[in-house]
Amino acid sequence: MEELFNRIIKEVKNNRKVALVIVVSKLGSAPREPGAKMLVFEDGTTFGTIGGGSFERQVVSEALKAIREEKPRKIKYVFRRDHIPKDAVPTGLECGGELEVFIDVISPTPRIIIVGAGHIGKPLADLANLMNFRVTIIDDNSEIASKERFPYAEEIIVDELAKGLLKANVTPNDFVAIVYGGLEEDYEVFKQAILAKPRYVGLLGSKRKVTLFKKRLLEEGLKLDDYKGRVYAPIGLDIGAKTPEEIAVSIMAEITSVIRGAKNVKHLSII
Image (cartoon, rainbow, N blue to C red; front, top):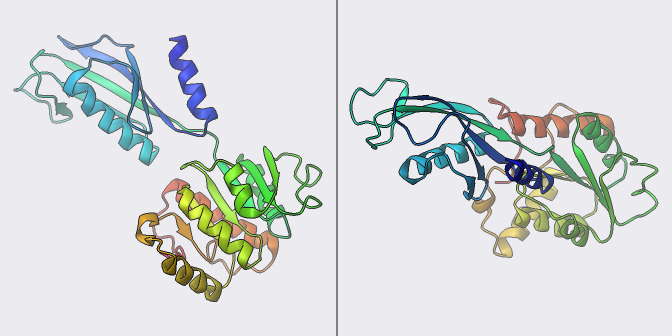
């Protein structure tokens, strides 16, 4: 049990989600007793067991769905070939009984990587911190990318932007907001961010700038369909934002809509 919880802590610290599967009830003959636990990791590997075989593979498949959707679920499995309740999933096995499992999703605190510590980066970081995001700041100017301006930042990286993003060790659960405002600098870090495949990449800029960047990416051989649903440019929901603070609100609103799976939200995407 101690090792199981240590594995959960390790995954969360490494910014990865994990599903905790618990047998919560048993009726008749079935592989494991209530309280049996198993972890399912994002890559499909497991720790512990709730019975093994084809039944466990079914549960792993459901756990991976739960991780992707970030939604827990309770499922009843039946170990016989007849008298299958409408609310149950048949396993094709012949133990005779039933098991109910609860699949919980344990997610790390979301991290936003803000590229650009200037006029928009500062209120964006302030708002993200207020919303309980872990904040990483990347900029090439140590005067504005400082602990004094961002006392809550988990990490402040001062370097060329693309190199700084590499140092940040982007994961599939991260949110990257590029609000630096340059041209070549933005392009290089934007390309690097897309290739890293975080959950969200947002780019500050005009539609003309976005169109130019898209053309360059295609000319360099990037298959943009491989990154569908991850790239948002121009960044932020269209709320008519003008000031840096309003733009920060629009960006965090967009990120929130991605996290919550909000419907009928119009995103501006290059893909």
